[in-house]
Image (tube, rainbow, N blue to C red):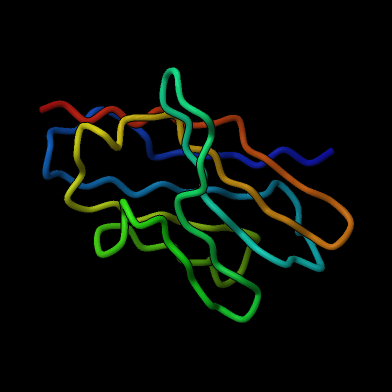
Length: 115
């Protein structure tokens, strides 16, 4: 099973920015959606942003206007640009790729926003 590799998390002050990256170690075909989820302590994992194979995007209400999801051009990769970060954005962020016959996840990357 292919595991996605995430990077870009870290500690940032409120109002700051981070860019998360997620790359598959080998090309994944028949992709339906590429997404970012997050899981905060004591809370359920929630979807943050989704981009479909035809480039349509959807965002959680809590991040609209602050986060931007995009796909890489060459490799199977997806990015999350996060601006105007708030303490409530603190969580482990996971990338997910849904293909027609498989679902792929990364190991997660910690994002911590200090007030």
